[in-house]
Amino acid sequence: MLSRVILLCFLSDFLLASRAQYAPDEVTDLPGMTFKPNYRQWSGYLKAGQGKFLHYWFVTSQHDPMKDPVVLWLNGGPGCSSLDGFLSENGPFHVNNDGATLYENVFSWNKYANMLYLESPAGVGYSYSDDQKYETDDDKVAADNYQALQSFFVKFPNFTRNEFFIFGESYGGIYVPTLSLRVATGQAKINFKGFSVGNGLSSFALNDESLIYFGYYHGLFGEE
Image 1 (cartoon, helix red, strand yellow):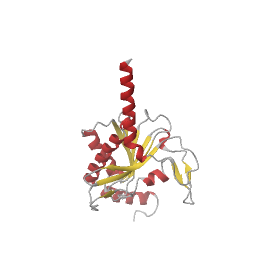
Image 2 (cartoon, helix red, strand yellow):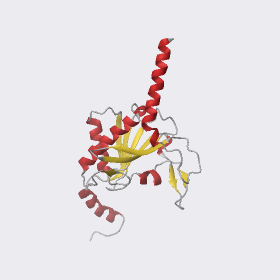
Image 3 (spheres, helix red, strand yellow):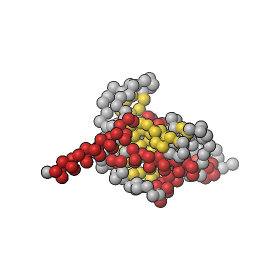
Image 4 (cartoon, one colour):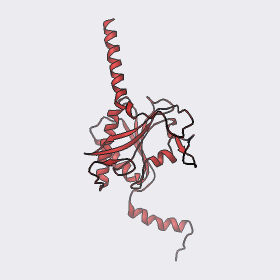
């Protein structure tokens, strides 16, 4: 009997501690939201490199949050906010044309995945650096994103066992694989399963050369 009481006390303390870690970031209401979401969501900051803080928005799956995968979404640019993907592509709700109200996205990826949207690098969207120096490169961005991911799983320890994927588009063709390499080879205990890129940029040179074939294929110009 005593052992059960001790176990219950331990579990209660653990749950309270884990909730306290991320409860301040929880979004319970939004202007223009006239529907009641069947998922939970948080928005706040994840510590990245020294003095850098990346803004995130995390929404749980509408299906089975504790079993469904966690998916990190990165928009491209470079310099595009991942809130663009959240609010106009695969997020759970979009903004109406009036700019003041929201509507549910029936094609949202959080139907079957816990979605993490990260504004990266520092200087994009609400993400910032204390020293206001925003010069960076692809390797530094990958390093900062990797640290932000570690901060995320510290903040949300209940999701450390979920399968984890990294998805992105456009310049995500650079962001996604460089970050994936760090996750796959790093020391952080992340249940990484893979990555995917849509309409991605992998090389400026190859991208520029492909425009010639694209234009010819679509009849924009002839062989001469």
